[in-house]
Image (tube, rainbow, N blue to C red; front, top):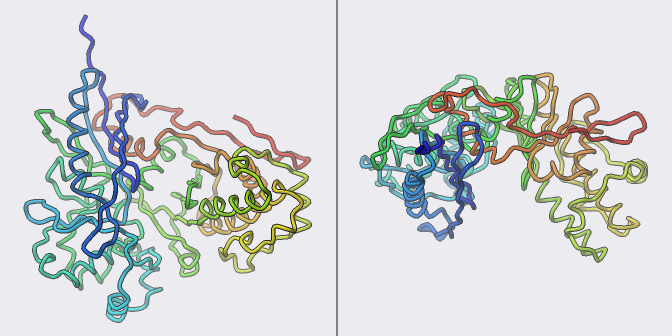
Amino acid sequence: MIKQPQPVIAIFDIGKTNKKLFLFDDDYKIVHERCVKFDEITDEDGMPCEDLARLRQWVTISLQDALSLPDFEIKAVNFATYGASLVYIDEQGAPLTQLYNYLKPFPDELKERFYSTYGDEDQLAEQTASPALGSLNSGFQLYRFKHEQPELFERMQYALHLPQYMSYLLTAKPATDMTSIGCHTALWNFADDQYHDWIYAEGLEDKLAPILPGDKIFDTTFHDHNIKTGIGLHDSSSALIPYLVSFNEPFVLLSTGTWNICLNPFDHTPLTAEALHNDCLNYIQYEGLPVKASRLFAGHECEVQTQRIAKHFGQSADKYQNIAFDTDLVNQLNKKVPVEADQNGNVNPIAFNDRDLEQFANDIEAYHQLLIDIMQQQTASIKWVMNGAPVKHIFVDGGFSKNRVFMQLMSMAYPDIKVCAASVAQATALGAALSIHQHWNSKPQPNGLIAIKQYSVIADDAIKMTT
């Protein structure tokens, strides 16, 4: 009996560092994967940037190779990539420039020209739910391209965000999706639900491809294979999808890493100027609704300060990955080294950076104080996205979800909310697959996509963990 190939969806998950291809079966289990890293190249100003030609080649060759695997039948393909990155294409679809790095400094002269023309920086940030971040606002990249390279700008047919450019490679269909234009781009007026006035004043609306739903697909032929192809998603919004599919009660997701990003898809209240000054912004999820977000540079700070503690006390930094939580020590430190909350609820620098390590008896005590200081600012950051909806769960994924001290401090900070460490394999890629589920998968969306461990405080201030 001839074995029938297994139906799968191919997902390209393209990060700044790692480029991954996954094949998911119709139960959303990973059945095949490959990962590469590329060296960056430089743009005309010597700034490091993505090697777009190599990325384009890798995507097409990897998909071609996957199509040749005899055990699988690729029914669909979708993309999730990092944001704040634009590819400027001409009428033939060829890129006109390098893929500029969103960390590239934005010229002061252009910034002054923009705001002198279009008004107050704070007002524009509030209207577009985008803190003023220079090149991290992809709309500013487009403004810069128009004014610094006018001849190339005239040849440009469309500016595509990177997820949609990846899709365009297969479909030749230009598109814009809401998860990309809604993420700190300074392009979208959230109150008016359209592009901001400055886009029309600059004549840029025709340079942005038609806005299509996040679950839109195109029927594509690639190397004689018929494949349903999605239009791609911004990676942070894609990573939220497995949670939206799995949980109905209001929740926030604290996605932890170098940045701790708190996402609340149930708070639709407008961002205030105060929230923007506290590093809040709005995303837009694939179904078009806003997602309020705040961020804290906590993972980076934890790594730097852990190194400082280890060096001071003559320890290995690896020691602290599995430190047990000490309730008595936390109570003692709260009395001995009190942490003052900001009276206005502002998010401030993490206090541990200025602490003298000589005041601590040992490294374990210092490490607990570091996490207490981080938690002080983490709760301040979370508060800015918790005002508009009653939250039943806080899910923590990423590095801090494995840190028992952090998780149990979270539980103490939110005794009336279920605080859970969450684990989902390749959430970004999985979200991109789930977003077009109905187009390729005849099965109902599965349960149990996310493994959770709940932390809770009990009467004697000890803390228990349940699975």
